[in-house]
Length: 313
Image (cartoon, rainbow, N blue to C red; front, side):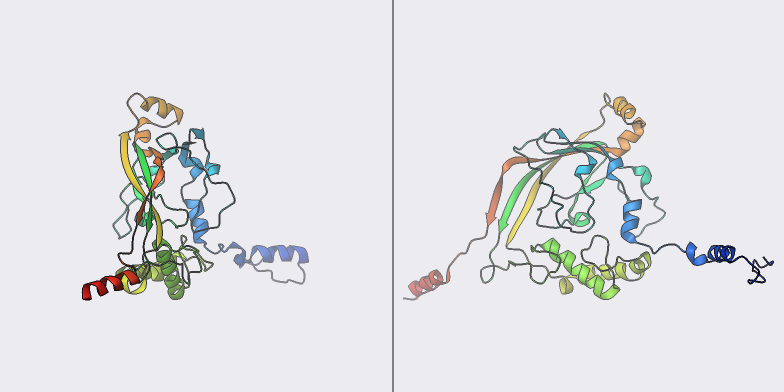
């Protein structure tokens, strides 16, 4: 090789060795692969296999394999649904989690997305309705066992002319069942794809995920614009049938003085770490019944005309 690492006479060089040298000198082979935001989320996000310390459903043990990471709405995987046969604590889901504060990114300054809290967010929702955890979820703090008593409520509203609910999903290509959350996510997804040619990880569809550059330059300002102009772009009507869950939360401190040393030894952590990172979440139904709230017609057309006729004559 010459001082510039070039082969002065390629005709005298061995052909196989020349191919090897040319391949090694091709720096295109060292370029990083295209950035994929979903891949980054999976690699850099929390891992349920490391976070889940214990899990029980109806008193029977469950494992990380019973949970599935879902970024955007997907079809069911065919597994049977887990059901409970009675209400009360011990008959629902109880999990102990390590929130891994050591994995949190340090805060160097304040932006509109800076987070100062530690813990998890949870949303209890109908299986026909996609979650919107960042806006509708409730917080669960480390250092506490949180009991969540749920009561199912079924709401029935009237369509026009008696009410103003919407009965069908309309032109959504992502959701079969209409809900305010589905409408909201659908609207935001369409707006982002039309204006930025990409979508966020939690959004449905097959458009490419936004790169960090696209997020900073286009997606984030576009979503902020939607929030400001929400009444003009994302108008989501009330569905005619809706299921929601009333919640009553109560908490007790963990660990107790009696259990702190035991838990620290069991999980090979310090007592301070246990107090700052461990939480227990206990979700159960108050009772296996539901409350129905139904909007009724005050008058049928015939009844209204008859009433008017009686008053007039």
